[in-house]
Length: 310
Image (cartoon, rainbow, N blue to C red; front, side):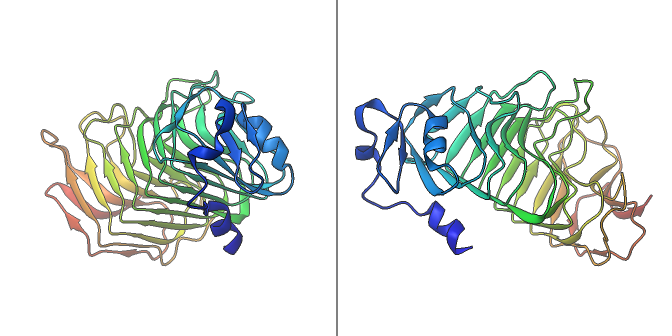
């Protein structure tokens, strides 16, 4: 944890002065500057480093093979990665020892197999803060790493997801068999298919976040715990929209498999409602695990049943 915090720390005196000669990518620890993001990553190699990114719109992408690398916008929200992908996957393809992303914008990520993402995480822990993922096939897509945890804080996922490709649906946040997924103080909105959060992580912690499906198109569940999970979903706000591919539930537990234990999963302190014009009945938590969950109390609008076993 200390190393991760160190990666995210930026000296107050660093910022724009370090972006010399029009080189937008600066390694904080050495002061070296680069025209291309991938060159900065390669300069860090298997070591530890923080790459400061100047304001601008970039087609760059990068692959982290081995190091512990943090990517941080000098000014949050002004460093925009627009459509450039590596390996036909994502703007950032991460398979190093640790990674952090702070203040970046990822948009228009589209690839042939329908899984174009801002971040493709192939192994290792990841911390994402103050980021915006918009108008892409996926926001963050991960492989499997049961020994690691993904943390997302104060980030927005907007205009993501699709079910138009033969490989299956893409989702705003799609996590494989990771040890844990923590989502705090984040917003999910305007989905274009699939789920807002689809996770096979063993532990789940979603808190103080909002899921606004009012402007969604062809969407499914808000949170899909595909293989089951333990942990907590609390303090969130959910609104189900009227353009749904599947409106049968807000949250699902183990609809595909029971790979993870789900006993004790707590879903409480949340608010859920239906967008204006929605009249169908639906379920807040639909459970396929058949294990003892801890559901409620939650504040549910008329037409939403608290729990159903399937």
